[in-house]
Amino acid sequence: MTTDDALFCHRCAAELQPGAGDFYVVKIEAFADPTPPSISAEDLHRDFRAEIDRLIEQMSDLSDTEAMNQIYQKLTIYLCGPCYRKWIEDPAGEDRT
Image 1: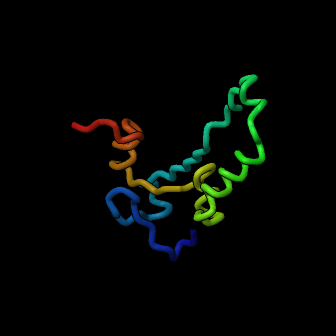
Image 2: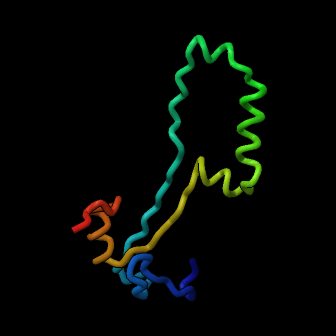
Image 3: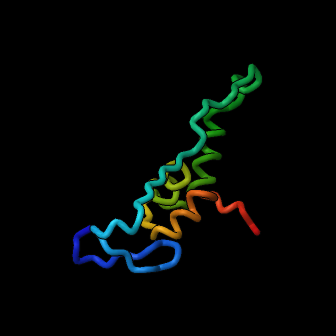
């Protein structure tokens, strides 16, 4: 971001002024469940080649980016002060009142 770039709040589109101290930079990193799968004795007798082929076929219509986005995403958003205060209290947007 250069000082010439216009910067806007990602929630309300208010123009933000770098250096004025009136906005927040929020960095979000999301990744798929990193827990190793549970493997049973029955699983050890499965046809792994067929399973791999099935998974490859299932993903064949995805671009590299789409496939990666299912595993990992990192983004940065800018929020004005009022939007940040609303967001930090309910980041998942669960307050439906």
